[in-house]
Image (tube, rainbow, N blue to C red; front, side, top):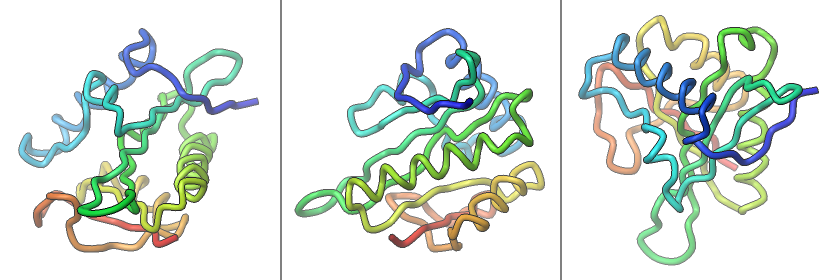
Length: 157
């Protein structure tokens, strides 16, 4: 059984997965279009970080960043650092993680959940995952700017 729990992005196996994620992002997209966070940035108090594990073995990770609200309580979040291990691909781990994050967002009574992903073919499975789960394309958010290498998506809750 796969369990999803809060975890430490600096933990050894997680750090390796996140380093692989960053390396792939820089190999796939121009540096100015890479918005993935390194493990130390994922320690921010505005970010909740989870891993998916099966019998203790790392299967994937994902994070929720609470976006600043100009006034009042936060109402928007952003998905960060969604990644599955090579051995977990095709097993539904990404869907489980995404649903976990969406459930957390709903529990926090946020109104929208955003994400940024790439336009290259490498990112096509991610874009399909998000679209299957109700995300639609939207304009840039939270300081992002239009970029031919980025797709911005939102889920209205």
